[in-house]
Length: 250
Picture 1 (cartoon, rainbow, N blue to C red):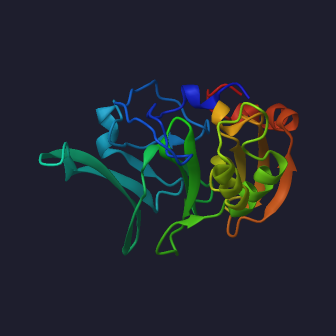
Picture 2: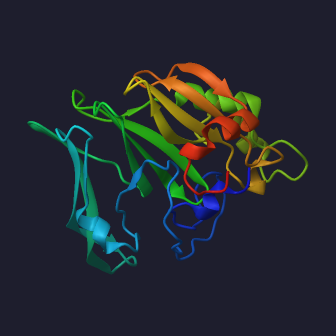
């Protein structure tokens, strides 16, 4: 995989993927692209595009929308100093319901063609991830993370911290063997209305993760419970689904 994170809408800051001592540095901003060619970018704190701060992303049938605005948020500058900044906030809006959307870093929204769900892909850290996908539906009071089975499958096929140059301690290796949350996932395309979702899962593209860095598979999952329906190798995923992917280097 050719470093997909390099072109995404991200903060290029060291993520807390591995336990240890990391020095925090000021985030840099890069050009905007998306994981899915059909997705629409949402605002987040360091997004350079101020036009997204009041974005409206309607569902295809016009009954629902993602509504964004700016709210004051106190940010700590040092142990003794804080300042108030305008921070973005988005909600999933349905009749009689407004559900806050977890924006995190580099969020993008992918509406299902029948308007019965929207998938939000975002990073919990920065360029390396970890990335996750949350599903919002009009009938639900909160988002659902459906990627557990996908993460576990990819972690079994491409375990972290293998090879002589892996930057992991024995404790970290054991932790990532037990917990597959380090696996990155992104929503690529809805299939069969809002019932099935094409996703990609990959090992973070960092030498810290060892010889399997950047390896990926594609998955079609039941978008209600995350059950894997089909899995695609790197070559097959690229051949069949590249046209649906954003410009992140597939």
